[in-house]
Every structure is written in structure tokens, then in C-alpha cells.
Image 1 (tube, rainbow, N blue to C red):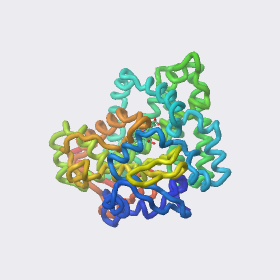
Image 2 (image 1 turned 45 degrees about the horizontal axis):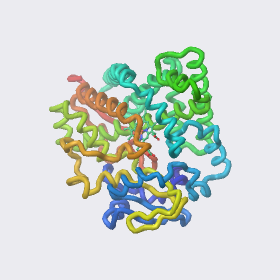
Image 3 (image 1 turned 60 degrees about the vertical axis):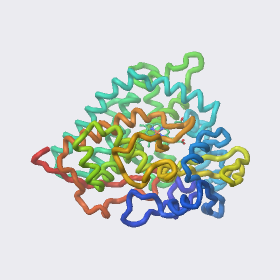
Image 4 (image 1 turned 90 degrees about the horizontal axis):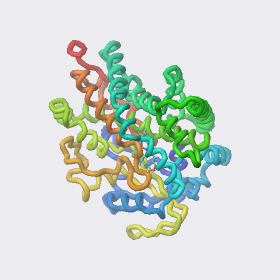
Length: 416
Ligand code: HEM
């Protein structure tokens, strides 16, 4: 049974198979495709056509073209392949409310604007010292229990989860439950019916949180959203959808960048040494890691609303188009020596945060989290290294977000 993201995309598994021993290289088939041109028609599962965009310029063009929809219900393939009961539940108007990642303009515009209005400079400034505290608390606990740890469960997953809790204003007492629920929901191994169950439980949790913020507003983002548009206030369903979107978009993405990014640094000792010697390089290093790793390795799905001609292909309305941000980020026409991790590479634009109207709304926050986390991780854990051979690190190959399931590490306790 293929993971749920594959069902939605009609994506054949072979498009994600990486060569053994190359955890950072893209799937072999994607590399092959990209050598033959920028856009490709491949066989999706069940004989459906699937178009894959691997060229950087073409990927940008599609992501900024309003003829391409983000709305899953516009995809004939996704609609015909999802089991009916799941489709009805996942795509009920109540469950779709506020989830603007799956909306097109002009519906998308209103929600995006209201949320952007809450990501104020002041709020982000207030969040920065909290991010530093959360990172420090976790490193303290790691060192106290060390000198070995699974970096994923002890650091990479809890840090972004707590940052989002902080942003939304989840009570301290509820943060444990909150973390457990989201972990289950985000795990793509979780069967679809359990996903529906878990997402219901999470919605109830969010609903209670929103009721509390309505009754007694505090200084957090969710309280701000409740009162954001007095003439046309957001409904509870819309607020739940927006809060869930923040959670889902901001948690595992950042977590996997932290864990996979650390793995990549440990496997490129010359680059790691550069970063240790010059922590001021961290912000540039984070951009290069985003480009080099492109953790959204399955790509970004879109559906044309009308027939579109792209690089000599006629793509019919309703088709699934997969924009491979990963291959776009490795395009030789765009980057010199793209498959080399070079932390000193001049900051070039990349597609790891997407492009166009849906470009990641949390990217500044993610950058602050990653810069703080990598800087402190290397400063506090001298001699950081893998505790197992690299080929025993379990990879998230079939997951929508690439990374590692676990990252067993060790360090020089005496110097920590
Ligand atoms: C959208 C990547 C962190 C919130 C996106 C998109 C990408 C992305 C590629 C565009 C998807 C599309 O076009 O369909 C990432 C990566 C992250 C990260 C790689 C971490 C390294 C975050 C964080 C937050 C966040 C921390 C919030 C706290 C969002 C939201 C959207 C989004 C709300 C939807 C924007 C829209 O539809 O207009 N992200 N993201 N992301 N991201 Fe992120």
C-alpha cells in the first residue's frame, strides 16, 4: 500500500528511489530525466499521465502561473484515486476552511494577508529569545543525559514543535499532548483512517484553544487572528484550518532540515570545519543546505485549469504536474557545480521554500530557528559525530518530507 502522498500525486515509487550509499543525491530516475530536458511526461500509477518539471526556469514559470491550481479538487487523478469516504472527510468544506495552501486567488489572498499581518517584526523579535531558550534547554538536557543521543527525537522534532506552540499560544500544560498528536498525524506511515481520526482530535484541540483566545485574548498570533478582521471575522473553522496549516507546514519541515542538515554536515567534514571555524557563515550555510537538500523531495503539486503548453508539451486540464523543486535546485544552468555542497556559495535564490503566491510564509521564522539551532549545536557539542556507520542511518525515502527517522550521534563529553 503506497503512502498517502503518493496516492494524491499518482506518483510512481521509482521516482523517489535513491542509489544506495547516496543519501543526499536525488532519486536516480529524476537525475536521468533531468538530463533529457526541463519537462517530462511519465507514467503515473494506474496508467495516469504525470508531468514532471525538472528545469529551474520552467519550475519558476509554473509556480508563478495562475493557470496552475493548488486546489486538490481540480486534479482529476487525485479525485478519482482517493477512496470516497476519505475524500469526503478530508475535503469537506468544514475541513478545508482556512487551509489556504490548497486555495487559489482570490480566496487564497485574503487568508494569506490576514496571516502575514500577524507575522509582525515585533512578534518575530519577541520570539527570537524564546527560540534561543528552547534550543538551549534541549541542548542542556542532551548534554546531561549524553554523550550519545538520537538527535531527531531529542532535538530536531521538539524544537520546532515548541516554537509553533509558542507562536500560537498553546498552554505549557498542553504542549506534551499537542506534540504527540502532531507527531502521529504527520507520520505518513499512519493509515488514512487513523489520520482522519487524529486530525479530528487535533481540530478539537485547536477549537478549544480558539475558544479560550476568544474569551481571554493574549499576546499570541492566534489571539491576533481572532480579532484580525473585525468587519468580517474569521469563523472557528477557518481559524482551526489556519492554525493547523501553520503547524503542519512549520513542524516537520524545519525538523527534517535540522536533522538531515546535521547529517549532511557530518558527512562533509571539510564543510563542517569551515562552519565551526566561522559561525558567522551559518546564515549562508543554511541557504546552501536548503538548496542542496531540498527536503520537499517529492516536489510541489499543481493542476492546470486549462490546456497549457510547456516546453513543447501540451498539458491537459485536470492533470497532475509535479514541480521537482529538488531538480530545479540542482539545475546546471542555474548553479555552478550544483551537486557539490559548498557552504561558501554566494547566496543564490533557490526553490526550497517554493515560489509565487504560495511561497513559504514561515521562511523567516524557519531561518531564525535553523541558524540558532545549528550555531548552538556545533558550539555546545564539541566533536559531534555519528554514533553509527552512515549507511545505518534510516532515511525517510517514502515520506513527503525527506530526512532521517533517527540520527544517533555522540560528542566529546569532557569538552561539552
Ligand atoms: C508554504 C517549505 C517552514 C508555513 C511552503 C511551501 C514550501 C515550504 C515549499 C510552498 C508549497 C506550495 O507552493 O504548494 C518550507 C520549508 C520549511 C518551512 C523547507 C523549513 C525549513 C515553515 C514554517 C512555517 C511555514 C516554520 C510557519 C510557522 C508555511 C505556510 C505555507 C508554506 C503557512 C503556505 C503558504 C501559502 O499557501 O500561501 N513552505 N516551509 N513553513 N509554509 Fe513553509
